[in-house]
Length: 200
Image (cartoon, rainbow, N blue to C red):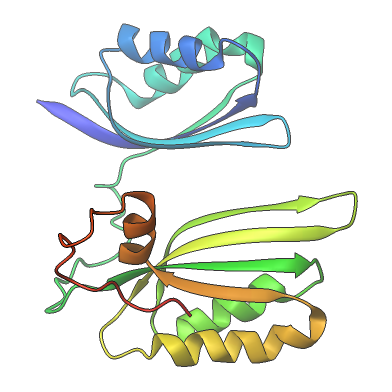
C-alpha cells in the first residue's frame, strides 16, 4: 500500500535543484503523481502530490529531502490530505466551464482584491494564477484559469471588470479554454464542426 502526501518545496533556483529533489524522492521510494512548479524572483517553488510506501515516516521524508537539497537551502512541508480533508467533495450535476482571464496594465494596489471578490460573487473557482510585474515601468500581467459554474454570464463578468479598471489603463480579456485550444491547434478548413465560444 502507498500513502499520498501533498508536498511544497521552496529553494534557491540553481542548476541541479530538480535533479536533487528527484533523487531524494527516488531514494524514499516516492512516486510523483501531480506537480506544479514555478520560479519566482530566483526562488524555485513546487507543489506536488506524491505517494510513498505506507511504512515511510513523514518526518523521515521531510528530513531526507532537506538533507539532499541542503545546497539549495530547501524548505519542505508535507501534508497528509486524509488528516484534514479541505472540504466535503460534492459532485456537481453540470461541469463548470473553463475560462482564462487576463489583466494587464499599470500596477496599482487593489486590482487582485477586486478581481478575487468579483469571482467569489459568482462562485467562480480559481484553478491557476500566473503573474509578474515589470520593474522598468511598473506594469503587470496576470493570467488566471477559472472554473465557471453554469448560468454565469461571462460577458457580464468581463464587462464588470472592464468598467472597474478601464479608467486606470488596465485591459481585461476573458476567453473560453476551447478558444485557446483552437488557436493553438487550428483544424483544417471544413473539419471544424463546433464553433468555439466568443472571446470577450
